[in-house]
Each structure stands twice: as structure tokens, then as C-alpha cells.
Amino acid sequence: MTPTVSATGLSLRYGSVRALDDVSLGLTPGVTGLLGPNGAGKTTLLRVLATAVPADRGAFTVLGHDPGSARGRQEVRRRLGYLPQTPGFHPDFTAFEFVDYVAILKELTDRAARHREVRRVLDEVDLSDVRGRRIKKLSGGMRQRVALAAALVGDPGFLVLDEPTVGLDPEQRIRFRELIAGAGEGRTVLLSTHQTEDVAMLCHRVLVMACGRIRFDGTPAELTERAAGRVWSSTGRDPGAKAGWRTGTGSFRNVGDPPPGADLLEPTLEDGYLLTLDGAGHTEVAA
Amino acid sequence: MRGVTRALMAPVWRTLPWRTLGAAGGVGLLLAATARVSGTGGEPDRWSTLTLLRAAALAGALGLAFLLDDPARHTTAAVPARRPVRQALRAALVAPFAALWWAAALCLAPAAARPPVGDITLEAAVACVLAPACAAAVVRLTDRARPGRAVAAALLAAAVLAPLLLPDRWALFAGTDDVRWEAAHDRWAVLLAGAVTLWATCAPDPLRRRLRSRLRLRRRPPSRSARAGSA
Image (cartoon, rainbow over all chains, first blue to last red; front, side):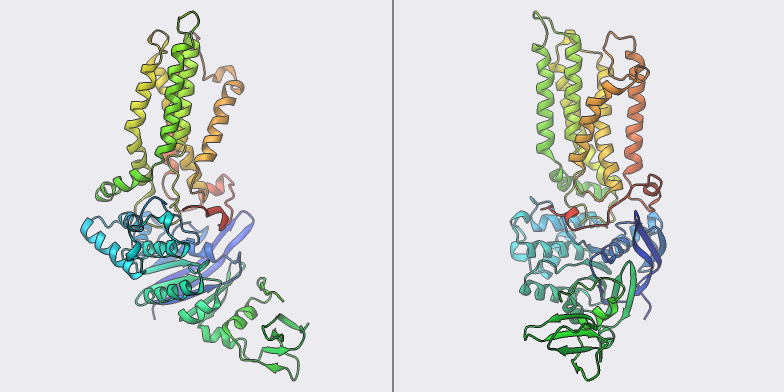
């Protein structure tokens, strides 16, 4: 399938920190997950692809438009929905007024059509009942849905979502997953997350980033497959394991190169992710 | 773009920091009115009237430093409506009120001690353009959604230090009887042009990071805490 979003050699430095290091990728319609530890460069990559910050080097196109020129960037932004990591709002606006404001910024100038569109997206994120409520009176999960509605307004072809499920309770997270899955039908969605479950349930493809580079690019099944035969259980912490942690049953789950005769376990996406990060970034496992 | 600008007027009006602007304007008018009672023996004093009008202009400028504060900056970072248009709209909505406010401040100052209106208005214009221009520079060069506080602090420090530190040949804060008055106002005019240029340069979204690299400015990697606290 021809990529709708393709990037080559994207690099960006913050002082001495190399946030993006020669990143190349191609995205196709559907939800692509972006996994990686803190500081891996996920947010920076999303901000570059969302045209919120320019890269130092490299180029990319979104739906056939190159944001390297002012006109090209306008065209990209007309086709883009962006949900930042910590969305900000005008707290005195109601949910409807805020999404309407973003719709105007997205050049939807016909008032009647715009209001119809705002009602549609608020309905899509299940906020119709509270659309007249001020944002400062909404819960964290509701605000996150207002931000998603703002990203969805105008029916963008490319949706960039930066950790949208952070801080949500399990019920809200499931609801959000449903919304993202719906948004991914017919659109290209790039979803940055720390939740391997989100990727397993939502994504047809997954990218793993560490130290500003793409370390893995494939399907969730392929990432899981990386850990096949490399996950085992033991009664104590195995010093030979790349990562290991105590499970609820009291036994230890280890990933790495198992010792002979080890009690092998069925791998998960998380195991594949941890093995991919090995040596490329910290694994953040409480062993 | 005209349709977008027209549609944006009402929501942008609501996002303006009216309380801050109102407070700053109120303080400015109070300072200007103080000039009426500041003279000795019932006669208004020219020097204190000039100083109080300058202080009033500074108060107004401190309020205008918050003009570009936008808690939704990151949520609206990737929209097609251009940043210069949005900033110009904010300025255009506030400008008539700023003009009326300054006219009121001048009227409050005693006529007998009032400095030349054109010259003192030039000084006020520099302060009131420089503040949002610096805010535009902060927006351009950093991830701050609310540059107002930092800019106001810097502006206040500059206003206090400039009369003390500027050498004689660059003097800006001359008295009306001072022979340097005219030369100082030539410099104020240059400053106004500089402030306008700064704003015009910093308003657009950068396509490349050349300016930041040249200035060797370091933008911290985006962090949750840097952008929190918006709503």
C-alpha cells in the first residue's frame, strides 16, 4: 500500500540532545502505534509530523503535500488533526465553544456547516450532553475527549495523537480506544503511547523508538514474535535475564536468553517491546 | 483568510487577558492622575508629571506583555490559520482601547506641566509595542504558552535599569528642558521601528530552525510539566 505519510532522514537536536536521529518511516491508513521509553523522541517525532516544530534535517510529506514551504505546510495543516501530550484549553469556554474555535482556526468559516460539524465530533466523542458546560468544570477524561474532538473536527486525513490515554481510568481508556479505533477507519492515525495494551488492541502496525531512532517497524504480532522462546518463569530473579519482574503469583517472569530447561511462557507484546529496547534504552521494569 | 479573521473575532475577544489589561490600565490612569497632586505649592511639577506619565506607559506595557498568552497554544499548534494573523487580530482588538486609555492618561496629567504630547506618546508607543513584540519572540523561540509573566518581569527590570545604565550619548529618559530631549526622541523612534521589526520577524511560525541555531538558543525537549496547567 502507498504510504500516506512518509518521512526520510528526520533529525532534530535540543542543544546536545539528539531527539530525532535520521528517522525514516512510511505510514498507511489505520492506526500505527509508537512505543518507546520516556525521552525516546516520540513526542518530538509527533510534533515534527504535526508541523508544530520544524526538523533540523530531513523531509516528509503528508497526503502528498510537503510542509517544507509555507504553502505546503498550510495544505498539510488543512488535512491534519493533532492531539498534544498535554492539551491546553481556554477554561471559560464551553466544550462546544472551544471545538468551534478550533474549527474556525481550521478554516471552517460557514457558521451553520461548522456548527453541524462541531456537534458531529462532540457526538462522536460522546460529549453531546455536556457540550454547554465550561471546560474548567469538566473532568480530566472529558477534557481529553474535548481535545480529541478538536483534533477530529474538519475530518482530517492524518491524525496525530500523543499519549491520549494517559491519566484516564480503565473505563475511560476503553472508551478512548473505541474512539481511536473508529477514527482509524479510513484515516492515517499515529498514536504515541506507553501502553502496550493500547497497541495490541488498536494498531495494525507498531514502531518502537529509542534514543531518537526507530528500533522496530512491523506488526504487533511480529513484535510479539520477537520474544518467542525468550520468556520464562522462575522462582527467583534470574541474573541472566535482560529484564525480570515478580508477578502476582509470586514467581518471576524473565525475558532474554533462557537457561536450558527453563519453563517457557507465551510471549506478549510487552515482552517483545522490552527485548527490542534492550541496549537501546532503559526498560523501566521494576524488577 | 478574511472569513476566518471575521469568524475569529468573537472567540479571540474572549481569550484576551482583559482582567490583566484592565488592572494595568487602571494603575496607569491612577499614576497619571497622581501628577495633579504631585506639584509643590499648588503648581504642577513638569519633571514629576513626565515621570508619572512614563510610569503610566510602563504600567500599560506590562499589561500588554500578557496579550499573547494563550493556554490553548499547543492544542492549536497545527491549525491552518496563521500565527501572524492571530497575533495581529489580538493586537487590533486591543489597540482602540489602548489608544483611548492613553488619551485619558494624557488628559489626567495637568495641562500646564504636560510634556510634548507627540514625544511622550512616542515613548508610550515604544513600551506598548515592545512588550507584545518580546512576547512574540518568546513564543517563537520557546514552548511557553504564557510568555506574559516572564516578559513583564524583563520589561520592568529593563525600565528600572535603563535610566541608570545607559551612557549619556544613548540617553532615552531626558527631561523636557534637557538639551538631549530631541536626540533622545530620535532614538525612541528607532526603538519603535526595532520593536515593530522584532514583532514582524517573530510572529510567523518558523519553517526552519535557523534563527534558533544562530542565536544558539536551547529549546528544552518538550516535557509534560512545561506545558501543564492550562485549564
